[in-house]
Image 1 (cartoon, rainbow, N blue to C red):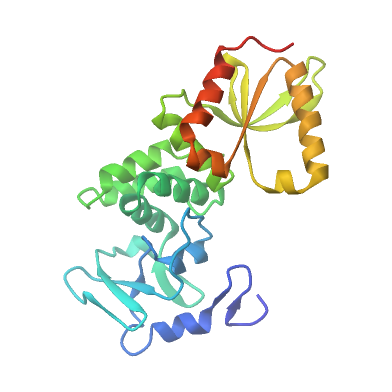
Image 2 (tube, rainbow, N blue to C red; image 1 turned 45 degrees about the vertical axis):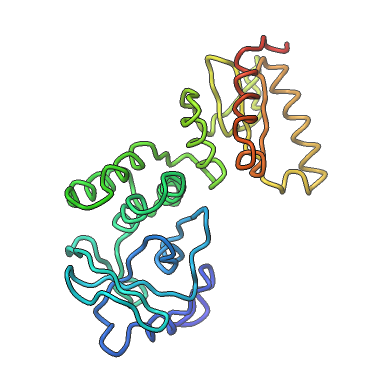
Amino acid sequence: MTGSNQINSLGINIGDMRSWCNAGLAVSQFRAAVQHGDLVRIHGISLLTAPDQDVVWLTRPQGRYRGEGRGIRFHSAALPAGHVATRYGVRLTTGARTVIDLARSLPHLDGVTATDSALHARVTTKAELRRMLASCASWPGLNEARRVVEFSDELAESALESAARVIFAQHGLPPPRLQMDIVDDAFRFIGRVDFLWDEHRTIVEADGMGKYEDPQRAREQIRRDIRLREAGYKVVHFTWAELFSDPARVIARIRKAFAALTAY
């Protein structure tokens, strides 16, 4: 932080945030949900779709202050004391409450991405999320939030990996193991892989574009794939574009690897 009002890593000016809360709004709370970008950025949670940075969402006690103003939208919801924290001088919902609000209001794929991200970044824990669910038992969307929380995995390291996990499950693939270290027969480390199905000796890698734009990284990936195959694994790669434009094709490649004999 270079000054009292600036959070460099998040790109949020706290002075601006405080100005949003003036004129009778100082006791309001931010609520994280669709387009509630301020809490998402403050907590460091990744979303599939970038939030609207021009709108501030504020939550006030149930049954009051519905509506919107210039650049501000109000939401009415319960705010128990354990759901609220103060950070950088601004009152906001805790990490666990923020995640549950996201999980119960976003589409399933987006909710899992946000929850995986929050767990991986240690914004919250699965135990905290379960306690939060218990305290919100009658709220709308809680069944979906429970499903998201139980499916979530702190080992997912990117939005692409989280989205892939959801799509794998939707297509009936068994759950893979995440971030597994692979060694050869001499117990020499080959690499850590994104997804592993031990019973099928199949490794699947979610490739960001950086692997293809950097020639050195691409060569290293080829060499690592050779070593993985020499160790008896089948290796499948997919990109963001492939997963979202033609997920059935990605699933077909994985199933083909499941059915194939090992290459070595």
